[in-house]
Image (tube, rainbow, N blue to C red; front, side, top):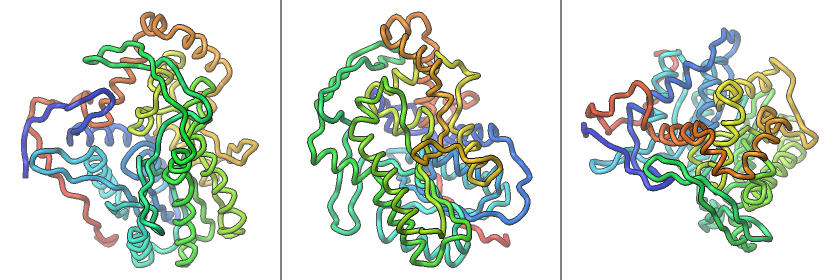
Amino acid sequence: MSTQKITPKQRGYLIVNSHPTGCEATVERLWQSIEPVDAGGRAPVALVLGSSAGYGLSILLAGLRRHGIRGVGVSYENAGNERRTATAGWYRTAATARLAADAGADFTFVNADAYADTTRTEVLELLAERYGPVDYLIYSLASPRRTDPATGEVHHSVIKPIGEAYTSPSLVFEDGAATVGTVELAPADEPERAATVQVMGGTDWRLWVQALTGAGLLGQDFTTVALSYVGSEITAPVYRRGTIGAAKEHLEATAHGLNTEVLAGRGRAFTVVAGAAVTQASTAIPSIALYTSLLRNSLGAQGWRTTGDQAVDLWEQLTGARPLDLDEKGRIRLDGWELAQSVQDRVRKLWEDPAAALADAPAGPTWFHDQFRELYGWDVPGVDYQVPVETSVPWPVAVSAAS
């Protein structure tokens, strides 16, 4: 037990501690923003890989709230110790488990490396014993490194352009105040590109689907999706045409391979192109913070689609409540609100002189900074940060469906 008053420890876009009450409040607020429905019928079984943050968390919450899903969520979080808090994802998972239990959902949370063969074995055994065949596999993993389960080699991803150096304006925060700086990145070499594909591509997605198939755990109408992003032409040099883009192309090629080779009529696989969001993964990408701030200014609060909004949209498509919104490459699209021509024209105009744009409308970067801090449970409305909190929070224990 470790009850203490804690304050944020921040360096740029890195916050090394988190607030348990603040993290719980962000999960509860997201939960309340999702309108419940009476799903009725059989509760589908879902396996969510990357369930503690970003789109994975939002898709899990929307599935629980609107469709009564049961199943397993996998994430890799740190419990912390007497000197350091647990990771934000640890606290978010504990909060999610409480909400799921209150809703009567039978959901189990596994804290383990989703890239490891041992984790696949553990999760498949859990599914076979407790839940049965999987209806939905959500692949939403984001990590800076991956250990190849076959070779033991550790691959590290990089965020770099391919072919040419990249220079761009960027958003810099000094004591919470936003200014415009400049980021310069040298192009990636081939080993760096290949390593990024190994970490962020579709290799492990395919391994998970193959494992479910081999174990006889594919539901009758099995569907699997992997989260992706395209984004604006403004950020394309460092994103879609950079090392991350190479990984996303591999992810999309994996979807095709799953459909034609692994599933072959026994299910379906899609990549999902989500819209812009403030996540722990996206804040690490140079120029994305500035672009997202200007996008927010262009759209305003009413035009912005949260991860919760997009998760609800995705479930509506997956369950057949409305038709799939597929592009020419067979990808499910959730980003039409972001990439609408009129929206992109406004952002592109602001991008011509971002310093002036921020001076004229500081709401965007202020919003971005607040959203970034909330990822770790800080600056959440309604939370009293002067009150000591218990930072040692247990990982949720599975409870039998009968109880």
